[in-house]
Amino acid sequence: MNRPESKATEFTERALANTDSVTPVTTAETDTSRPQNPWSSRLAGANDRQLRKLALLGFANGCLSIGLMSVIALATGEAFIFPSLGPTAFLFFFSPLAAAASPRNTLMGHGIAVAMGWLSLAVFGLTDAGTAIGSDVELSRVFAAALSLGGTSGLMILARAPHPPAGATTLIISLGALTELWQMAILMLAVVLLTVQAFAINRLLGVDYPLWRSREDRQPRTDQP
Image (cartoon, rainbow, N blue to C red):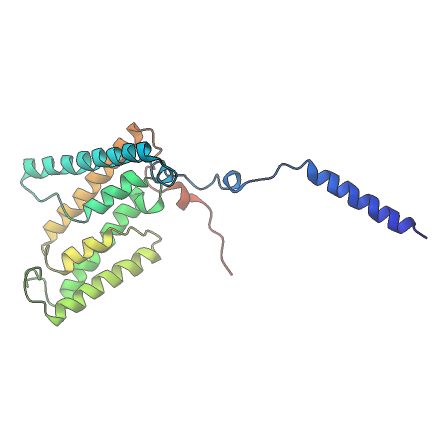
Protein backbone atom coordinates (compact mmCIF):
# COMPACT_ATOMS: atom_id res chain seq x y z
CA MET A 1 0.00 0.00 0.00
CA ASN A 2 2.89 2.38 0.71
CA ARG A 3 4.86 1.50 -2.42
CA PRO A 4 3.74 4.49 -4.55
CA GLU A 5 4.47 6.80 -1.64
CA SER A 6 7.97 5.37 -1.19
CA LYS A 7 8.72 5.82 -4.88
CA ALA A 8 7.59 9.43 -4.71
CA THR A 9 9.83 10.03 -1.71
CA GLU A 10 12.81 8.44 -3.47
CA PHE A 11 12.25 10.57 -6.56
CA THR A 12 12.11 13.76 -4.46
CA GLU A 13 15.34 12.89 -2.67
CA ARG A 14 17.13 12.30 -5.97
CA ALA A 15 15.87 15.60 -7.35
CA LEU A 16 17.10 17.48 -4.29
CA ALA A 17 20.48 15.75 -4.53
CA ASN A 18 20.84 16.84 -8.14
CA THR A 19 20.09 20.46 -7.35
CA ASP A 20 22.91 20.51 -4.84
CA SER A 21 25.44 19.86 -7.61
CA VAL A 22 24.14 22.60 -9.90
CA THR A 23 26.30 25.73 -9.97
CA PRO A 24 24.14 28.83 -9.60
CA VAL A 25 24.23 31.19 -12.57
CA THR A 26 24.61 34.84 -11.71
CA THR A 27 23.26 37.80 -13.60
CA ALA A 28 26.78 38.82 -14.57
CA GLU A 29 27.38 35.45 -16.22
CA THR A 30 24.16 35.56 -18.22
CA ASP A 31 24.62 39.18 -19.24
CA THR A 32 27.83 38.75 -21.21
CA SER A 33 26.07 39.77 -24.41
CA ARG A 34 25.70 43.32 -23.13
CA PRO A 35 28.88 45.42 -23.58
CA GLN A 36 30.27 46.92 -20.40
CA ASN A 37 31.31 50.56 -20.78
CA PRO A 38 34.82 50.72 -19.34
CA TRP A 39 34.63 54.16 -17.72
CA SER A 40 30.98 54.53 -16.67
CA SER A 41 30.90 51.00 -15.22
CA ARG A 42 33.77 51.90 -12.90
CA LEU A 43 32.14 55.06 -11.56
CA ALA A 44 29.55 53.44 -9.28
CA GLY A 45 32.02 51.57 -7.07
CA ALA A 46 34.95 53.97 -7.39
CA ASN A 47 36.79 55.20 -4.31
CA ASP A 48 38.12 58.77 -4.08
CA ARG A 49 41.44 57.93 -5.74
CA GLN A 50 39.79 56.07 -8.62
CA LEU A 51 37.25 58.86 -9.01
CA ARG A 52 40.04 61.40 -9.40
CA LYS A 53 41.67 59.23 -12.06
CA LEU A 54 38.40 58.94 -14.00
CA ALA A 55 37.87 62.69 -13.72
CA LEU A 56 41.40 63.33 -14.99
CA LEU A 57 40.83 60.97 -17.90
CA GLY A 58 37.57 62.72 -18.78
CA PHE A 59 39.30 66.09 -18.55
CA ALA A 60 42.14 64.97 -20.83
CA ASN A 61 39.84 63.40 -23.41
CA GLY A 62 37.57 66.45 -23.49
CA CYS A 63 40.47 68.85 -23.88
CA LEU A 64 42.12 66.73 -26.55
CA SER A 65 39.05 66.13 -28.69
CA ILE A 66 37.65 69.66 -28.67
CA GLY A 67 41.17 71.12 -28.72
CA LEU A 68 41.87 69.34 -32.01
CA MET A 69 38.58 70.68 -33.41
CA SER A 70 39.61 74.18 -32.35
CA VAL A 71 42.92 73.82 -34.17
CA ILE A 72 41.04 72.81 -37.34
CA ALA A 73 38.73 75.81 -36.91
CA LEU A 74 41.72 78.12 -36.49
CA ALA A 75 43.50 76.68 -39.53
CA THR A 76 40.49 76.82 -41.85
CA GLY A 77 38.77 79.93 -40.58
CA GLU A 78 35.50 78.00 -40.30
CA ALA A 79 33.41 77.38 -37.21
CA PHE A 80 34.11 73.73 -36.47
CA ILE A 81 33.04 74.13 -32.83
CA PHE A 82 29.35 73.83 -31.97
CA PRO A 83 27.65 73.49 -28.56
CA SER A 84 26.22 70.06 -29.38
CA LEU A 85 29.71 68.64 -29.95
CA GLY A 86 30.37 68.91 -26.21
CA PRO A 87 27.81 66.33 -25.06
CA THR A 88 28.70 64.14 -28.04
CA ALA A 89 32.35 64.15 -26.96
CA PHE A 90 31.34 63.29 -23.39
CA LEU A 91 29.35 60.27 -24.62
CA PHE A 92 32.28 59.14 -26.77
CA PHE A 93 34.67 58.94 -23.85
CA PHE A 94 32.43 58.21 -20.84
CA SER A 95 30.24 55.49 -22.35
CA PRO A 96 31.88 54.65 -25.69
CA LEU A 97 30.25 51.22 -26.00
CA ALA A 98 26.70 52.49 -25.53
CA ALA A 99 24.47 52.42 -28.60
CA ALA A 100 23.96 56.20 -28.40
CA ALA A 101 27.73 56.75 -28.70
CA SER A 102 28.25 54.54 -31.76
CA PRO A 103 29.26 56.14 -35.08
CA ARG A 104 25.95 55.04 -36.59
CA ASN A 105 23.79 56.74 -33.97
CA THR A 106 26.01 59.81 -33.84
CA LEU A 107 26.04 60.50 -37.57
CA MET A 108 22.41 59.55 -38.15
CA GLY A 109 21.24 61.48 -35.09
CA HIS A 110 23.00 64.71 -36.05
CA GLY A 111 22.01 64.24 -39.70
CA ILE A 112 18.33 63.93 -38.75
CA ALA A 113 18.71 66.95 -36.46
CA VAL A 114 20.18 69.11 -39.23
CA ALA A 115 17.46 68.08 -41.69
CA MET A 116 14.64 68.75 -39.22
CA GLY A 117 16.18 72.05 -38.13
CA TRP A 118 16.36 73.32 -41.70
CA LEU A 119 12.88 71.99 -42.50
CA SER A 120 11.39 73.84 -39.54
CA LEU A 121 12.97 77.07 -40.75
CA ALA A 122 11.57 76.52 -44.25
CA VAL A 123 8.07 75.61 -43.04
CA PHE A 124 7.70 78.79 -41.00
CA GLY A 125 9.54 81.10 -43.43
CA LEU A 126 12.51 81.73 -41.15
CA THR A 127 15.42 80.86 -43.42
CA ASP A 128 16.33 84.56 -43.77
CA ALA A 129 15.06 85.76 -40.40
CA GLY A 130 18.38 85.68 -38.59
CA THR A 131 18.93 84.41 -35.07
CA ALA A 132 16.40 84.46 -32.25
CA ILE A 133 19.12 84.19 -29.62
CA GLY A 134 19.36 87.47 -27.71
CA SER A 135 16.34 88.99 -29.46
CA ASP A 136 12.57 88.91 -29.19
CA VAL A 137 11.09 85.51 -29.96
CA GLU A 138 8.08 85.39 -32.24
CA LEU A 139 5.38 82.73 -32.24
CA SER A 140 6.64 81.30 -35.54
CA ARG A 141 10.04 80.70 -33.93
CA VAL A 142 8.40 78.87 -31.03
CA PHE A 143 6.60 76.57 -33.47
CA ALA A 144 9.80 76.05 -35.48
CA ALA A 145 11.76 75.05 -32.38
CA ALA A 146 9.02 72.70 -31.25
CA LEU A 147 8.75 71.08 -34.69
CA SER A 148 12.50 70.62 -35.00
CA LEU A 149 12.97 68.96 -31.62
CA GLY A 150 9.80 66.87 -31.82
CA GLY A 151 10.59 65.72 -35.35
CA THR A 152 14.20 64.92 -34.49
CA SER A 153 13.16 62.87 -31.46
CA GLY A 154 10.53 60.92 -33.37
CA LEU A 155 12.70 60.20 -36.39
CA MET A 156 15.66 59.06 -34.31
CA ILE A 157 13.40 56.58 -32.55
CA LEU A 158 11.96 55.33 -35.85
CA ALA A 159 15.48 54.93 -37.21
CA ARG A 160 16.59 53.16 -34.02
CA ALA A 161 19.40 55.69 -33.81
CA PRO A 162 18.91 57.78 -30.64
CA HIS A 163 21.68 60.26 -29.92
CA PRO A 164 20.61 62.78 -27.23
CA PRO A 165 23.08 65.57 -28.17
CA ALA A 166 21.33 65.82 -31.55
CA GLY A 167 18.51 67.60 -29.72
CA ALA A 168 20.86 70.53 -29.21
CA THR A 169 21.93 70.48 -32.88
CA THR A 170 18.40 70.87 -34.21
CA LEU A 171 17.67 73.74 -31.81
CA ILE A 172 20.86 75.52 -32.88
CA ILE A 173 19.42 75.57 -36.40
CA SER A 174 15.74 76.19 -35.66
CA LEU A 175 16.65 79.12 -33.37
CA GLY A 176 18.55 80.69 -36.24
CA ALA A 177 22.16 80.36 -35.11
CA LEU A 178 22.83 78.50 -38.37
CA THR A 179 20.65 79.17 -41.40
CA GLU A 180 22.88 78.55 -44.44
CA LEU A 181 23.24 75.10 -45.92
CA TRP A 182 27.01 75.42 -46.12
CA GLN A 183 27.10 76.11 -42.37
CA MET A 184 25.13 72.93 -41.74
CA ALA A 185 27.52 71.02 -43.98
CA ILE A 186 30.44 72.23 -41.83
CA LEU A 187 28.56 71.14 -38.71
CA MET A 188 28.18 67.63 -40.11
CA LEU A 189 31.84 67.58 -41.16
CA ALA A 190 32.76 68.53 -37.59
CA VAL A 191 30.67 65.62 -36.29
CA VAL A 192 32.45 63.24 -38.67
CA LEU A 193 35.88 64.48 -37.57
CA LEU A 194 34.96 64.19 -33.89
CA THR A 195 33.74 60.63 -34.48
CA VAL A 196 37.02 59.72 -36.17
CA GLN A 197 38.90 61.14 -33.19
CA ALA A 198 36.73 59.12 -30.80
CA PHE A 199 37.51 55.93 -32.70
CA ALA A 200 41.25 56.60 -32.69
CA ILE A 201 41.51 57.69 -29.05
CA ASN A 202 39.32 54.90 -27.68
CA ARG A 203 41.19 52.24 -29.64
CA LEU A 204 44.51 53.64 -28.39
CA LEU A 205 43.16 53.33 -24.83
CA GLY A 206 42.27 49.70 -25.48
CA VAL A 207 38.51 50.26 -25.78
CA ASP A 208 36.80 48.18 -28.48
CA TYR A 209 34.96 51.15 -29.96
CA PRO A 210 32.83 50.02 -32.94
CA LEU A 211 33.46 50.89 -36.57
CA TRP A 212 29.76 51.60 -37.15
CA ARG A 213 27.10 49.88 -35.04
CA SER A 214 27.44 49.04 -31.35
CA ARG A 215 27.45 45.43 -30.22
CA GLU A 216 24.21 46.15 -28.34
CA ASP A 217 22.52 47.14 -31.62
CA ARG A 218 23.86 44.04 -33.34
CA GLN A 219 21.99 41.74 -30.95
CA PRO A 220 19.00 40.05 -32.66
CA ARG A 221 15.70 41.71 -31.81
CA THR A 222 12.70 39.72 -30.64
CA ASP A 223 9.17 40.91 -31.26
CA GLN A 224 7.43 41.91 -28.09
CA PRO A 225 3.78 40.85 -27.63
